Image 1 (cartoon, rainbow, N blue to C red):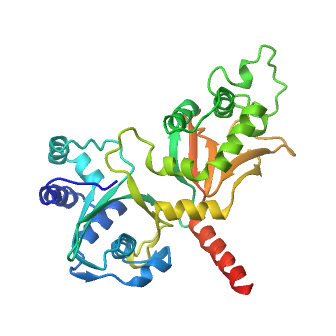
Image 2: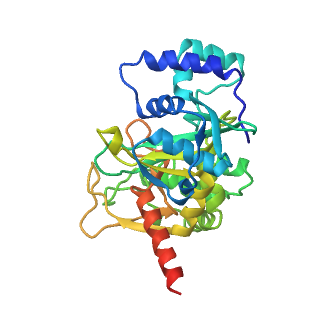
Image 3: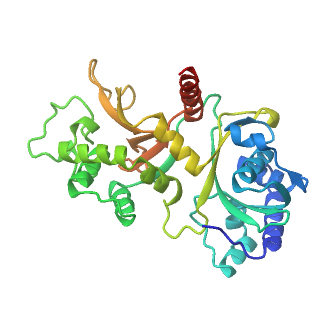
Amino acid sequence: MALKPIDEAHALQIQAGTLGRRTGHDFEAQVTDDANKLTCPRVIPTNEKKQHIFQGAVAQHLVDYVCAREGVETLAKIEALSTGALATSEEGKKWLTVNGADIQRCKSDIILTLHAEGGQPVTVGVSIKQCNNSSPTNAQLYFTTASGFVSLLRKNDIQVSDKSELALKQFCGEPGHQPLDAKNHSNARKTDPRRFFWEEVDSKGRKEIEKLLQDRHDDIFRLLLQKAYHDDPFVPSYVVHKTKKADDPALTEVAIYSIEELIALSKQYKGFETKTYSVRKGSYKDPDGVSHLAPRFGVIQMQRGGQKQHPTQLQFNLEAGYFYNLRDHLDKVTANSSGK
């Protein structure tokens, strides 16, 4: 659905003041600032449709990429808004309140309004992911309780049984659904007594969830990307992912996708599967020879949060380096097709 910010000029003034007062730009703010400084009119290169991984000039690549997919051939004007800058500025909060936009929780980090020569403006939301390690790491996509995830699915017409919800609660180790709760529990358990691993949860519920993640990959991935927050005013249509740390902006590498492209590529990449692993750190290390199953579908990993603050939350991550994996998989498919 198209977004319609009201009085963009005022919002841009607020944002400029907010960003200018910062001692240093974070990645999101820098991309926003650079996008607003792009020279227009700008003829959009057609080759932006042919790749997803870019180096340097992040704002330029993002704007060209979005324009190419939104049918903007010549860009007459651009307005980039940082939802974070507006939401953290007192004047920005007032502007948002007047215009009825509550972005305390919003999946879009940047709002782009693109004015094409001779055409109507197009406004899209952009979700920003970033990694500041020397090599790519998992990127958190969605974080909630087992019941919260089930509620999200049910509200969007994806039927989930009580058995499936039970399996997810066991997987997360919610109170009342832990090995510790068993009447005859003893210290005989050699693995973590606070939660059940995927291979241990209710078998019927587990199989139902596995089938759901396989059969409804597109719908569930779309919900995780776009619909995590109730009444989100700025649902994203694009994703920009900084792949790893780069001290030199010219060497900053990003992966850019429309959400529909990312969903399609993820589905082509692989269906539901489990990956074997062992717990090697923490208070409950696995004994030698003991392993567990980690559920995954497409480029998404599903796991128990395990953090001190929210140990029993359900967490969905984009797998480390998924952008390279998708590129390599697509290259392999293309090569196989060409060889036939």
